[in-house]
Image 1 (cartoon, rainbow, N blue to C red):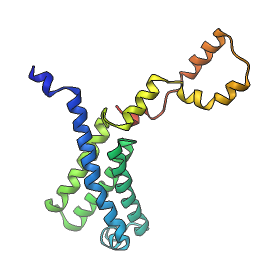
Image 2 (cartoon, one colour; image 1 turned 120 degrees about the vertical axis):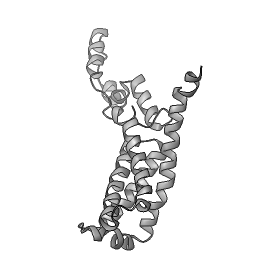
Image 3 (tube, helix red, strand yellow; image 1 turned 45 degrees about the vertical axis):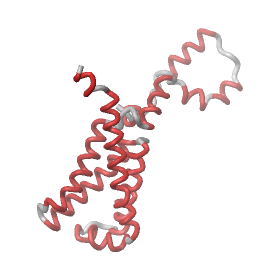
Image 4 (cartoon, helix red, strand yellow; image 1 turned 120 degrees about the horizontal axis):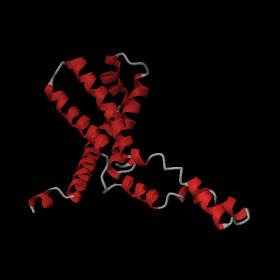
Length: 185
């Protein structure tokens, strides 16, 4: 009885939702802080690493935090957003270790964001996400893409016999939506 209460799928998917939304909401302001004074961020964090184009890389870091956070919050392209955040946190952790050594007070927040993004990449966004809805739509109607793009071609051609149309449907089903595994598990 307790096993069915505590380990139901709804709780797991709700936990993924909470992880995604809290990570996104708490991280997004860091990206806006970078944009607020991009040259100061470039001087303080990018130039000490001797990376080329420090202002450009600062804009990329801010964009990945803002864009990745929105993708996590919405659950749309979740693994892509988490990958952007993971990349930014990797560089931030490297910067913290190079400039300050193994200082746990600097590393703890970075490590939490890193582990959240890494977990979201591995586990997926869960059922309470836009990725899951997109995946379900394409799984329930695999010919959706072809019917959308081939409307005009079908209206200009003669109707196929029943045997010919079944062959063309089988050929169309060999195409799968390429991002279903990346969007949702």
